Image 1 (cartoon, helix red, strand yellow):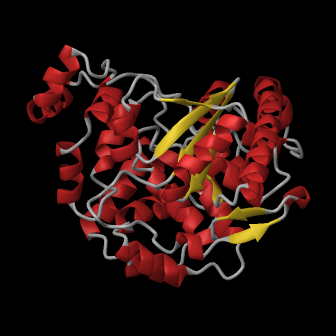
Image 2 (cartoon, rainbow, N blue to C red; image 1 turned 180 degrees about the vertical axis):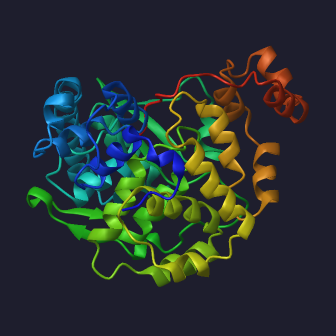
Length: 386
């Protein structure tokens, strides 16, 4: 793999990408170990880096294992705990005839079981039908979970968001009835429930998304506030594409146009093309009617910022926001109509306080002014991701 940017001539970036793509490292002498660890943490890939180095014969295992081993062991313990909780929920939902699909990390684990040690997870994400939400709440309550509003109103979660969080001990379950914030009357991936399939990891029957819809979920997740540049979900998407026989690119192109997800999908597939060994068919990228300037900006943005780990997560997210929608106007409308709660989350305000209400009402002036002044920059790049 030849990396298409002079910045990738950095020995640390080259080595990091070689490890991720299971290639023989081009250079290991004079490597700044701290930089590799920094990349691993920023992209939430410490565990995967450790795993990939176990069969290394280039001297890398000794160089990095002691620094990454604690995270690896802790991740196995956490993932086993989350998996066992997920199985309990899955069994209870089946008994109560509640349709459920794992999302993101749990989907990857179910799909590629028993790979407990390859992926970091923070919580359990599941998708249910909206008309079964009340039943799902009762089942989770019986299992010892309690619903958390996190200081926000129930009305916000039900009408303007798309999931509830349920807590038990150190486990968080996010119950989704949608995949994104509501955008008018347009349904996103309306056929998702008709395309599910069943897997049997460890003899447990689990319904999962089709491979194509799982990739769409990762593309949609890019629109949600967080580290837009993290490569964890990129590697997940690449693996799903690589290991799915007969991956349906026709459906990908058709549904991206119908659900207006071409820009988000283009962003994700560009990441896959740039940073993994997975090949995206050229005609797929050409078939998506994303503006030429938008494609160029996505590539430039990714090449420039993906390995600048000291940058602002907030600033990167705001820049990428306009590259994730099929029209600039749609991106602008989202900012204009942003719910009060999301506004407060972005700026770390206390929801519903007099100050946050005032600034929210003045948001069309406040948001661009604060961005211009640079006050939104908060150097905290290691946000936990799912």
